[in-house]
Image (tube, rainbow, N blue to C red; front, side, top):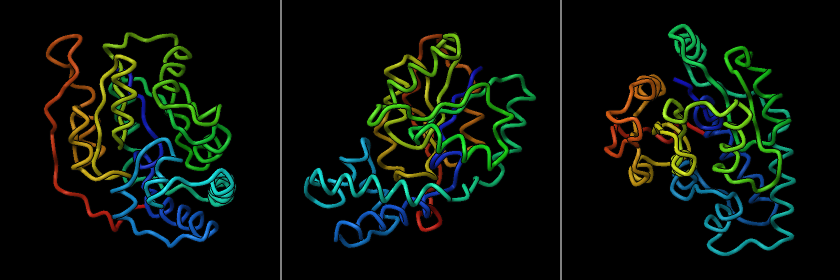
Length: 233
């Protein structure tokens, strides 16, 4: 099996970091801050739509420029908070013979800096961040799979934490497993039509379990306990 891992909210336990960064962005455009629960309730992609939802109105072009600049400043020097047990899990998956790669919509240069700081890069066959502004995850995943040499898509699974991850996987004809400890609330993930579990270990176990049929995209959620949003980005 080949596992494509998401970064923010999945391998990283960075909800608190993201809430803080978003609140700096909101302060920069004169809007009040939000808490982690509101962040998770409103989270969606693309990011500009997310900020529209937080504001309750469309952001202006000038505001969006300010938001992008402020967010980049907040991210550039951060020390990525790796989720507990990630290194052991990646090692276990590799020891079982599964190949792994990393795909994120974080800007590619920023992603590579962050991964290098975590020393997790040794586990990944390929690392890809966003190369063009506003690239959808589905397009990024398609390019990522092509760069990997087009592995058999029946043996590829994306592990992430958002409905957008599930939509990207579906668009590319691969399976997805979502975990409920990231950027979106479990009730939002349940509508994505893919398995939802409460930990990365459970996600990995589900990912390497072959579906009943070669082309099956699992649709019965495997829902774990509700996650305490206060602990995360």
